[in-house]
Length: 343
Image (cartoon, rainbow, N blue to C red; front, top):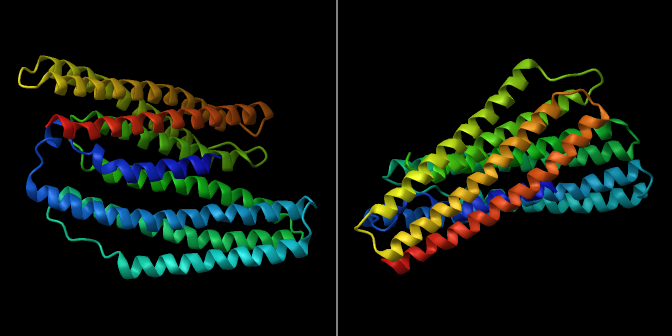
């Protein structure tokens, strides 16, 4: 459930990123040469997104193999049926991977751009593509290993599956942070979107730390290291700072737009609508800071039943807040699209 939400969120970041990168004052007067480079980058990102989503879908398809392995271990699926179905599914995954990898090598030559921030976006995109490509290849192998262990009635299958699911969740978040970092490099320091992205980024890093601490505390008498816990709390604190800074920027830009005599009434109303959306978004981020802080606290405990229950409840709320975040992003993109009518 969480992985699928993360996949959706990642796709959304890549789709709407260019619409969110320019400060509202610059969006109405982009230089012609920058516009051409943005067009080139937009087309390339669209192709890159298609390739990345294929790799991510292959990773997600690995859950079908996991279900077979769990079914065999629980005695709910006949081993021979799991063996046949698993071989067919893994064969399809390998074929899709080879086709996507060949397409990436042959068709996704990175464009050469003069604008350094856009060129950095391309470099980050290439890094991101390589990351998900490598992980997709590894996940095919891990899925096959987990199923083979289950078919051999090897108890290590549980360990393989647990580690694989945790690694997948971490990958999804790390991949999103590459995409977020790609957009942060384009943003002006006065753009509220920058602080919003910073909150996304630092909360993601905190959740990654939680997953890793869960791996440590999953062992009897284990507890996460002080360094791991301090790192997670630092990320949460950085996200809280980003939320505070974002609220300050939103307030200042609301006041600036409202007092700018050069802006039309329609333009002022448009800016205020954007700022209201950002204010609501920072409300969501503030709640996420609290919930993720709870995740960090719960993951710092040993594998007690109450800690596990708290983790489950907090992850459910994280998912709900992510859905709210996505809805506000979609609404913001729609508002940004109305700028053309004001020019």
